[in-house]
Length: 122
Image (cartoon, rainbow, N blue to C red; front, side, top):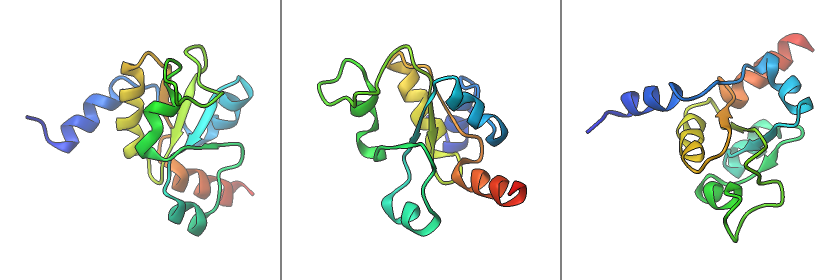
């Protein structure tokens, strides 16, 4: 049995997490950015420009290219960068997507880090 901290550490050890400074470059290189925040957080804090919105509870079904419920953007050949509020849930979700054969990672610090970066640089 593992603690949540141990599970998170194990998940992140598999990931090449993306910094907010590198997110635009990743998008320009063709990465699919997926926002998994609940609707209440998106309504309260705003949208992440260019991100595909997929609820966390259906994420694996929508992004697994072999799933009959996949989104058109799902591909084994496309990098996926997940975004949640602070970058915890997405680390766990990205590790699961990697088990499905996807090139998945997450945004370090999540939407809040992106928001802070854009407030400070804009």
